[in-house]
Image (tube, rainbow, N blue to C red; front, side, top):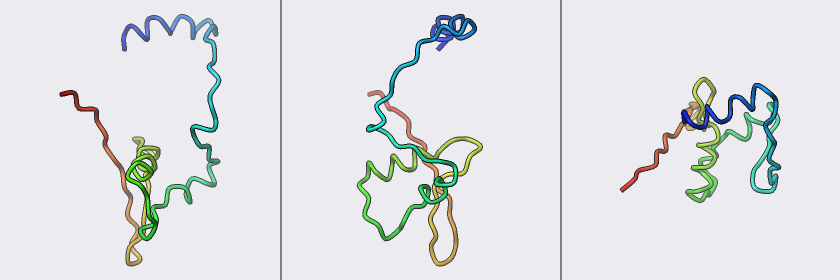
Length: 87
């Protein structure tokens, strides 16, 4: 991390970082007014484990609301903590 900072910060200060084009077909984009709906977990919908984990992962940021679902009229927020485990 320190090496990355040392190598990148001077370029950042001089505005000499090159952008990398992104493949928009490999991700999704949501405007702020769409996030509430996109953050809802439908308890009666079929998700693959990957789809559900990706939804949760996309909304798990400190200081921001997570995904949510309603059950019996009560709203719950869900977050996920995923860590790599080296063997």
